[in-house]
Length: 348
Image 1 (cartoon, rainbow, N blue to C red):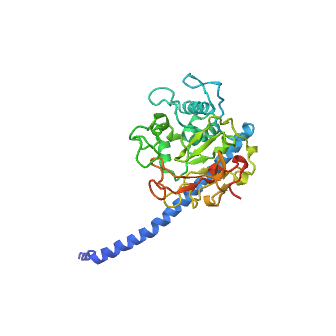
Image 2 (spheres, one colour):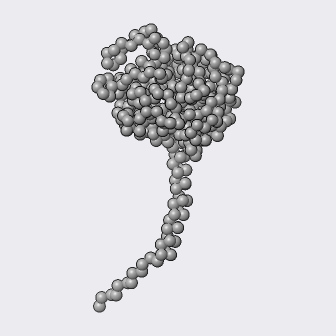
């Protein structure tokens, strides 16, 4: 005798609603916990990267007469690019632009054709590409190490991770900043859309290097400007021949490199917001995640007696000011512009 099939009970509407509520509640409970775990993991990875950069910095200094890594081509001297051209810089900035071009050409092999690296104008390579000197040094004879390296990218910086994985995509649909021209609300300097800059986003860094590490202290160097935090002014008489680690008066209290944004906090505050707790590599190799507001005030090298403040204007695809576009809040630049440069102190 065949057993009778068990009756099938359909889920009632009430049961379905209860199930949906339970699943939704669990989701709302679990997702923030998972996000917190992810943020902590990415923060630890970022700390580890900064520690490695510090160790690389120290090795570079040992092999280069105690110098802090920075561009070191000399104006007035001739250098040969991988494509055979001879370059002579008329200034320290010109020489650095040429050295930046040489490194990228040599390491990537992009010296001919449509993907050939081009020079960039209106930009100081120290601002976003000083780290390439160190990465070039650490890569040794292995070009693949240079090209595949993401040591200078914060694991939470998803944009730069994508850009670094697609270095040949820099056209109008690439998603790069200003690939489609200048956008309203963002920094409006027209040079952002030049091809030489678009090509370089894939090789940029999430970690800012303080200006005192590559230019001499004093009023003759590059200065901050009030209308944008992304560009520096002046510098016609700047000494960019390089700095020595022995010039740092208080290595444990002076920031060398730091995350540009606190990507573990809500809305990714820029480093200059007082509550931002970006990871910072100090000159003694230690790490510091104290809030920016605990650091000493910033001073422009051209005006060492008055605290320097300026508002944050975003680049395209970068986090917005906490007050939205055109936020007029003036922020203290803290350790970017330390009073006294390498002789100064950021954290007491």
